[in-house]
Length: 474
Image (tube, rainbow, N blue to C red; front, side):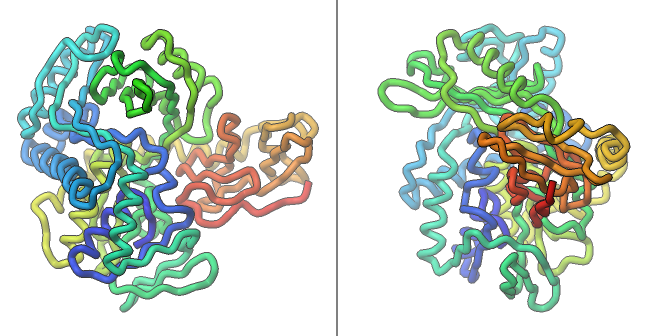
């Protein structure tokens, strides 16, 4: 198992429970990456997916999606109860809403499609939000919880069942022989009968999934809210570059209001300004709330909407992948654990074909989104090399900031620390060579092509890159 987020640990635990010997390799700490930064909504209502699935995959495809995702929600609740994991799991309804009357028909169509797919869905115009909506889909039976606490409990039980977890062990090579061989950054070789790649964005590109995945980053702000002002639900709207709202237990008669939004491609735009827009929205809609926390999350959108869970590529016999959860990785990751365990055990659930990464029937439907993604990648891969440097000279880079500078004809990613010392690394992402850009709010180098992220010292923060940016002299 490569990766110890929600998909990796769920799969590892399900496999161990089924009697398999399991080892997990994690580049950092377990549940500390994408899963550790999620806003933790656990629901089968995934924004506006069901009306689209009804049109692209037919009513049966929408039904299987709803069934598999709903099964994942119930699975999480059952596991938490069975293992006694105190992860603040609460059952709440989920809402997809709009404030724009012109989009009310879209919301109504989604409610009809979700209901047709088998979800307990209804169209409503009243919610627990402290502002009016033009229309909303309401689905009962959702949940919210603390995902890291949940996964730490899962990891503890996995170890009790004989499973091994190796943190700070980055996988850098994969040989799909018999047995499979995984090489780590330190040179250790791990052999296994089957390998699952659950690294959010696959760290190996032989399946060419990078052409079908589009990375996006979302910002999160949070602050205490009196318990009597809790909107009592998990909410999301496609309006205004997405706005997502939920609360979590905070103690002392309060809840923690969590607001997500300002979707953008990593490495593009003004991140501090986006944080301010999101915080302003939260303060406007929930008067009196003081923003005390902020962070960011990253997701990968598949070009045909549905996650890719199953055999890694057409020739794969013992390698599997779980990716493309498009912001719904909690239910998707738990679903992936059950699906991959069945496939490795020789079974094939009815929805296996829906998620199969090798699916070809959606090729024509994928074409516009896939072409658009490749145009975006090409723009950065070629255009960024032809454009002028992002800073005229190293001297213009202030403390706590960074920029790409051309020195001796080569692009350098230069960061100046608070003490005034400048640090330079190669500006070319080690995944496919696109030029990185500086995220001033998070002080990280980001690749706009496939979403790799690096620290100011060049170390890998997030894949698909699995090698650091090389240090350079100034």
